Image 1: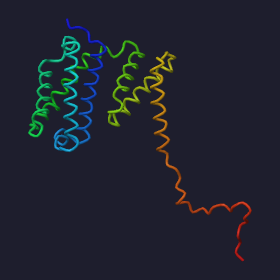
Image 2: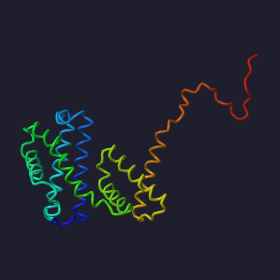
Image 3: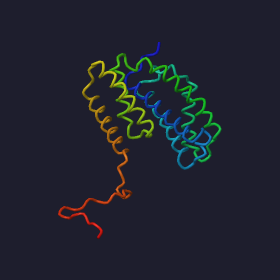
Length: 218
């Protein structure tokens, strides 16, 4: 029976899921995997970096804890990630795009499902624990999130916090500080999106200055 993954392994698995999510968002933004990989200047390098990041997280899990706690992930998918990383690192200019397309379209969804089969039982036994894990992952990755991902994470955190608050459930003080910073940021963004009236388009004449009467035509 495999060992249960510890918090460090769970965090690394969450990070892998985030990298997969980034790749999915890039491909969706470009209208498909082939279109994303065709962009040699921006999107292809971004995808390749996330694929390398995925392999590096698995390598850290193996070095720190061994792979016993993630036996639900098939050896085929693990080997595929290692092979993909080596291909990117040593043969970047002659990458086989069809092979990369297969990895992204078929292998990553399988890998994502296998990881979720491990993490779903450890998302938190209580709503407070789930909120803490969400905040921990957000705080560690907020500076590298795409804007859409960051907003989605923030909204999910605020939504769960609102439910806990309505139920008068106590929240960890450190989590509250981060929640407050998220709330403040969202409030500032909402305020900045409010259009100020453009005085240059206002045809209303200015009021007379103090001590100056209204001028009448003779």
